[in-house]
Image (cartoon, rainbow, N blue to C red):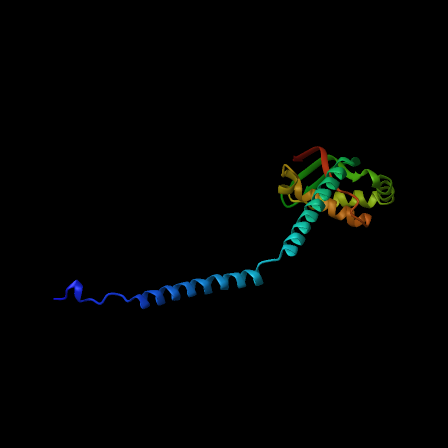
Length: 179
């Protein structure tokens, strides 16, 4: 059986050498972290440039939001016509009747240009609306927001006018009967 007195006591040199190795290892870790931080972390100039870029971007977004709000205030509603459409569907032996007033919005600054384009294309525009309503499915005609029909009319109208001058369309006094 071994006694505690039989184990050799650590020598003073071994303890100092161990401490020196630990200190050297810690110094190497700190030095490595400093070198990595120096090469991979951005400099003060880079941080400043990034902050200025972010401020610039936020200012541009704010300006864009203000411009959109201003345009929204400058929109005018213009009546595009009253429509009364009757379409017979031989496959189901039913007749559909759709009555509505179509209204569009344009920017106040583009009012004159729109009036000229609309006057020049009013019969083609009317035909476009009639065809869209007659080609619509019953589900589209009974949709509370009439979203698909609005998008189709808006897209084809702007194509007819040659530019995106008409901002939106909506239905007023809409009535749908399936007889």
